[in-house]
Length: 380
Ligand SMILES: *Cc1c(COP(=O)(O)O)cnc(C)c1O
Image (cartoon, rainbow, N blue to C red; front, side, top):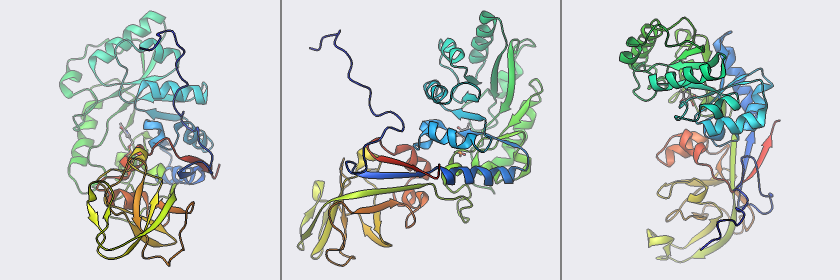
């Protein structure tokens, strides 16, 4: 049994911490210049409307502190995270002075921690409203917050019935910075749910004290000016994910992910490949095993491929925890050797392509990216 007084081991890899390029099994390159250009492109579309940066899940896996510092250079001064813990970490990294909102609201009892870190809750329920009002009374000053209403996604925010039942003094002590809501189907511009949610949002915010309004995420910005209100809240588009699926991507790519070849081999027809022998060679094959696996955020069952100099190298067999076997028979013999890098995300395969092959969305691919990569920030 462990001694309760023994010192705890050092915490795991912190955001932005990185192993050396030589030591790492895979290299993640994050182009902060491209993130800034994407922010400027969104701002140009917003024609004067303010634009926040959404940094939940450590900036969609890319490093919330690094992304925020880059966006600040283009005048971004409002950030959204999902959880209080993310907000506390971001506040530590940025210091005082920028507005940081916590989308999921504050867990009961955590209000003092939010106040100490200068974080603003997104208030999603009457209980959260009451707790924030009491916190304001306890410290004797007004406290900022955003109020979220549920305009039809049924996820977070006050439902219409709760809004109707609010007392006149419900917002005493609260400085309402924004009334906001979130779109469920913004990436489907022809879905009538978008207009239904916008109209519901109009009606619901009319039941609240007059305040600035915010509705659009990345795809919402592309639904047009009626969706822009006073503040847009893009995440995905900043990181190069296409906010207009089915149309050309108006954003710059941001991420490059490359994995190292750990070993190469030739196998004969009939060889069983990987765990469970889910694949057998249908002829003699040349294979490379790369140092990248499901522990790095790639789904175990994902059928997919890596690329090398524009040549597609299909995964064969199952994805392992720390390795994937790829078929390199399409390359000239000896072209790829130990230590060479193959591409998983980059010019040959966008985040959205990689996600489509894995049966998921770009958001999940980025948010799943693991902690073992050598992280290289460029375009600073
Ligand atoms: C995640 C999120 C966003 C950003 O959405 P993207 O589609 O990544 O632009 C905006 N608002 C809320 C409430 C969110 O949860």
